[in-house]
Image (cartoon, rainbow, N blue to C red):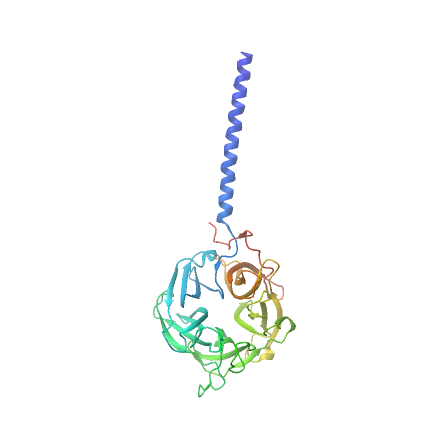
Length: 359
């Protein structure tokens, strides 16, 4: 009987160990599955000049590729490039039939608008770029768009004489006035190796600039000066707790040193079309030994609205050129109210998904 009891105890121990190990493996599997669901890695896709807008619980991502403009709609920020639809193709000829660059999607007064740059001649030198606007024909931002024409970005608003090179145009409302902000040249040139400044003008409506442009910033800081070209481009407005910022890209766009600078309106009640009313700081976000050429950012919040996220492009490698991919990361705020973007996350490293996305 004693030996029988010993055998039974051994069998019972084996059963307990096996059951415990089985539970442990299952639990580990769930953790692994949860880990994969609740994290992501950069890059989130190929592309450049990312623009994301959050509206009614969806993220809309817009980009130019294959000679047209595409918009995707998704509830998950980390999957912004899924469900893309072609919304506009340029005409066969005209001022905007080629070189479609950096489109942005804006919701203004209950209507959707796309701002973009284009040219009358394909390829380089890129000396014909001008800015244009499209208006959605319906309430669906993934529907068709009407071409509202070229925006006037020159110095003679009354006659519209001699429109001047302009790219990366964005719009914002300050003091209940709609403004356009873009990257442009002092005058038209025969070479695209021309310094780029940031300009601003008033708008009468989303498709009409109503004042002459003014320069609000020029690439003069030491950290803005590139080995080949001094430029400021990709201006994006970021507002937080009563502060108004313009986050822009600077230095040679095709090199690993491309980075982000910042303008802040000294007093939110001051005239934004006076250069002296802005203070410059930078670089506020730059590459590392693993991430190159961080630039042309846009900003949004997590699905539950508790986190702020920056979406930007980086270079695939250190080779000069525009082979880029899209990255994103969570950012916070400094005690003075300015954004703190931190350091870009290396490709392949796990990042927690935006708050509220993992369920």
